[in-house]
Image (tube, rainbow, N blue to C red):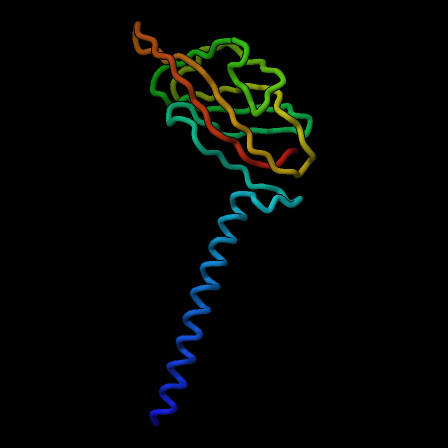
Length: 155
């Protein structure tokens, strides 16, 4: 009986050791895949990181030509003003920017466009973006900057 228990224990230790190792390798692989490390020609899921809670992207399109349009939401709780100044809405190594001067009321959407570095349709991008604006509360204005990274596939 004793010999049978030792074989069973050895088999369990073998399965547990390799089971944990396989689990760790799978988790690392999934994380790397989600970060886009493997590249590939498949489409990359649209996502964003960064950006303040006050101004956040709702949707965006980055064409293979580099033409980029982003729809933002003003969640500041007060009106904001975007100034039409060069470099207000840069993207990666921006080749040009056409920020539109506007005042946006709280909880309203607005769009900004720029030209980013292009790519191939279906290829992935990580676009570093920044938007400067002022927030108005009564007679007080505060300068702010919303910046972050948009990820997705060129269309």
